[in-house]
Image 1 (cartoon, rainbow, N blue to C red):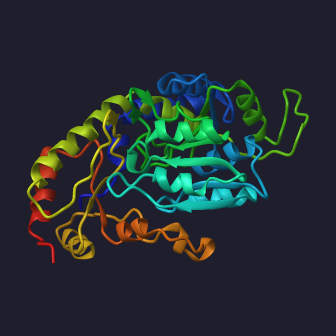
Image 2 (image 1 turned 180 degrees about the vertical axis):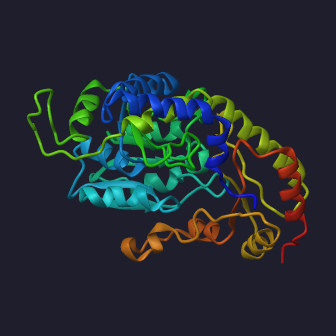
Amino acid sequence: MILCANPKEQYLTHKTEIQNAINKVLESGWYILGQEVKLFENEFSNFVGTKYTISVASGTDALFLALKALNIGTGDEVITVSHTATATVSAIKATGATPIMVDIEKEYFTIDIEEVKKRVSNKTKAIIAVHIYGQPCDMDALIKISNENNIDIIEDCAQASGASYKGKELGSIGTLGCFSFFPTKNLGAIGDGGAITTNCEKLYNKLLKLRQYGWDENRDSEFSGYNSRLDELQAAILRVKLKYLKQDTKKRNDIAKLYYEALKNSSLILPKVRDNCYHSFHLFVVRLKNRNQLKEYLKSKNILAMIHYEKPVHLQEAFTINHDLNCTENIAGEILSLPMYPELSEKDIKYISTKCLEVKES
């Protein structure tokens, strides 16, 4: 079976380095907030191009703590999209703030700037820009809205490690960048993990306390905080994988080029990359009306394609909001994620593409 994502293959590629990193941590006897975490945070800051990185327990925690650091809570509104992982919206709800979900651009699947402008109010405290699938949002337009309305921009980079916008790494453009290191992510741990990036020293210092009970250096809680720490094992593993992230992102782009070439004359609508941007291709998402038929056919040929995401957040029971998000709903019925990970071979892509071409759009 050719999987949609395959973190085991990445582990096998770097097995010796990863095992050595794990053994080093185990031998050290220091498993929480030690040297590996400090080194990873420094190295990740260098990669993203920010002054600071605060590692946390998950991408969801990264979003939640970023919102808390900005003092967002009950009575506030945060604008984002419904075409995203549930975590984006659940993090907003967890603060007590109200998520305002707007529609997406049909071409890029990212937040629609004109819809954002319509929903900005005096209650709007932040916009979470989701770089879905590794596609950069229109950050120039969002920063303009931010400056005009004194609204913070949080970049949801869960799927966008290694992507850039006009030469700037995603996670370095907004007030805060939030990353997930879930195993299938472009930079994935062997377990959960996340990080927040920023250039603001004040937010950095606050986030250090928020992730650990509100403690200062004397373990005196200045305010009520949380327990959200990246452990030493995951940090050590991420340090190994970070060394190969640029190389792996290029491989993903090379695989995307193979898909584009093989499927250019098909009935599939292929993903479009925003001008002057570098897509990280966390996922290679195509569109077609008979999506489910193709998905099942590929499965019968030992190819696991998946749907990200079949049911938009605003239609899920826990988050039901009466928003008119026509593009989001239409896209959700057509999208299909083809296998995408750096270890796929040219032979794999040829086989997948050939099987895609065997299904005609109804």
